Amino acid sequence: WNSISVPASVVEQPGHSHRKVASPLTGMVKQLFVHPSQLVRPGDPIAELELSGDALATTQSELLQVVRELEVNQAELNRVEKLVAEGSLPEKNRLQLEYDRRRLQTQRESKIQQLVVLGLSAEQVQDIEESRQLVRSFVIRTPEVASEIKAHQFSPNPIRQTGNAEAAGEKNPAVPIGDELCSLAFHAILFLEGQAFEKETGIISKAMEQAWPLAARFESDQDTGLRRQDLKILFVDNVIDQTNRTFRFFIALQNEVLLD
Image (cartoon, rainbow, N blue to C red):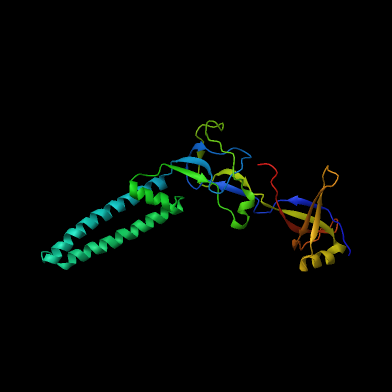
């Protein structure tokens, strides 16, 4: 057996370790549910907005108008069908109402899609139709993550704290569409970024191709130190640093939670 030792650092996964949570709607921050450094699960509430966008209110009102017209159309269709069956009215009266109903149904589906695009969920749109009330507030929640690493990231007992906008230091701060509300750090899986010399390209490449097991020894104030075995190289950088003639390679590292 022959082995080599190279320095490495624990780094984040670019493009995966940080996720920006933006406001999908225009409104005022009504309530905050989190604080800095709090651990959250997918689906946990982050903030509640009191909606103030004209587009959302207008589209909701137009949807309710279409729903009312559909009810009137259905009632008239029921009445006309009986008269047509009795011969009191011609068939074209019923057909005209059928055409109107299809047109209204198309408008309803279009308004529903517009509300979904504006940020409402299907459940919220359904509630608008059933309750005949406009949605006036919107709760922004932690997004979902990949199922294969979800269990390693989130604590079963996260800290929960409820506050309002004034408690956060601002009085009803306005939030336009796309404005960043917070940044989530997702550190379930990290990288070990190794730094090898150009002359070690062959053995590093072969270690990746053959899936040879690697061991990582972490600096520690303990005598034994911290070691992790059976690690595998994910990929090797395709660029060699022209100054120090080194190249990077990366190893997936499961993050271990010491304290929540």
